[in-house]
Each structure stands twice: as structure tokens, then as C-alpha cells.
Length: 369
Image (cartoon, rainbow, N blue to C red; front, side, top):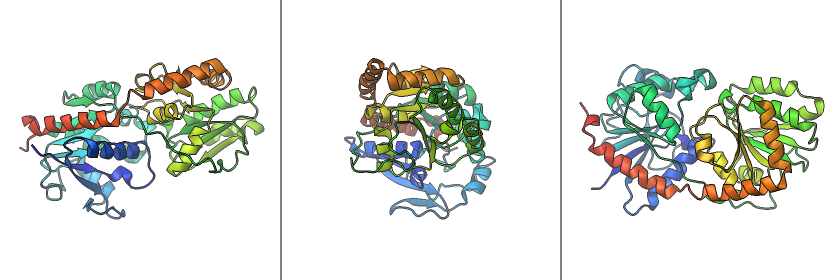
């Protein structure tokens, strides 16, 4: 039976974060399956410039989220009429009287609310109401699926891993990031929010700097509420170490790929993660990964990364030292990373998502009441 899915493409508006990469890759994967669904992209926005064919839910986002946390008004039923399933790709699915799927990327907005942006906390009551209406939840890892079952009290949960990013083609003539002056560097990517634990990474870099005085630390990502803590951590470093911490906003894709491929290691010390796409990007690029044991990172990394407790700056510094200076361990990490990234496929993700859409469409418990 033909399948029509209304899908939230809001994460494609603005800087392409990890959620934006998920939506991009999912759309591409869905287009490649043998019997692709008809997709009807939609965005909750008054003002964003949208691609042709994208439906605008013409409501002010913040006020509408507040309303959806209390009631099912305003309804998006008219705007999304004709869809068999509505897929909210970023924690929120609008009330529309239709079978629905919500992607919950992690549960930190509930379990660690102080670690996320205040706007993100608006998602919580909206998410709870959607689950109470019978929406299914898609998660990118078994770890998050377990959290959803416990936190939201629902059995309508399906864990479907993300796929791996394609190999990036980087122009060798692309200049290095300004301010590096050819120095080797550790790279970290992600919005500057407390959950990413970048202040702890700065502390670890300070411990490492005495032995690796030429090494720099590069933080790439959009501004966020952890900037003050990061600035304080930098201020506590020696002058030489502090001068070698480079902070830059989110980079265009080609420039970000170049920054990753040229890094000595990727540091991913998060306090909580639902998946960890940057780890797979680094593995694909042949860059060693040092990550924390928090959230789903161990589930995704397997044996292809050095894993340390997220609150242990000394252990993080030691792991980075090994990844950068131990040639045998470095080569082993790169080889295991190559093998690991091959186990994640967006085509498999897309097929599993279609199976979920079909399950949701057939589930009597999510029929409009």
C-alpha cells in the first residue's frame, strides 16, 4: 500500500547540526529504497526561507510550543491532511489527529534539564502530550530507547541506529583554520552547551599542553549556554595553553570536513549523547576518537575509540596523549574505526524507518479518537 509521510525538515533550516545531518541522510536514504514513500516536508516557522514543496505551519514557534504543551491547539491537521504518518524529527510532533512518530535523540532534556538550552526544555510537555496521544518514539540507540520507556512510560518505542556519513571529499588546497599556523590540534564539535562537556575538555587540554606544547585545541560549534564555563576554563590555563585554544562557530560542510581530516584526534567527552555521529565521521576520515563512557557513546563506538569517564580530566588527557603519540595504538584505532563505521548504513536505517511507519499506520492505538 502506498505510504505518505509528512516529515519535519525544520532541522535543515540554519546551521547543519547533527540533527540536521540525520534528517538530510534519512531523506536521502528514503529516496533510495525500492518503493519509496511519498514525503511531504513541513516546517514550524513564520519566517524561515523554505525550499519549494515544503509546507509551512504558520505559527510562531515558541508560543506554539507553549500551547502544545497544554493542549492540542492549534491543530496542524489541515496543513498535514493526506499524510498516513507524521514524523517529528526533532522531539516535537504537532497535534494533527494522525498516526505519529517522534524522534527523541536523547533524554537529557528530561534527565538533565540544566544541561540543555531553555528553548529545548519547552519540548518536554509537548513530547509528553504526544506520547500520551499514542505517538510512537524512534530513538537512535538502544540506550535512549531504554530511557524513553522508563521516563515516558510507553512501550511504543523503536531503536533504529543512524547510518554512517559518506566519505568526504576535501580539496587539499583548502586553507587551514585561521589562527592555527600549522600546529597539530585536537578537534571537538558541537553546540557550546553544558552537555558537550567542553569546559572539562579545556581542562584536560591544559594537562596535556605541558607535554605537547605545539598542540592546539579547536572547538567548532554554534554558541550556547556553556560559553561562560568554557571561557572560565580557558582563563584558568597558562598563557601559552590558553593562546592555543581556538573557538569557531559552525563551519560550512567542506571546511568542517577539512578540519576533521587534518585533526590529530577527535575529542567527544559529552555528559550524555543519544548517538554520536561525529565519532563515525572521524572514523570514516581515519581520525582516532577519544570519547566519554556517557550515554550511547560506548554502544556506537564499540572497540573503535578510547573511552573515559566524562568527569575525569586527567583520564581524558591521558587518552588523548595515547591517541596522538602512540603510533601502534593510533593505527589500531584507525583500523578498528574503519571496520566499525562499515556496520552503520543509512539504507538500512531508511528501510527500518519505513517498517516503523507501516507499524504506526497499522496501530489502532494511535488512531484519532
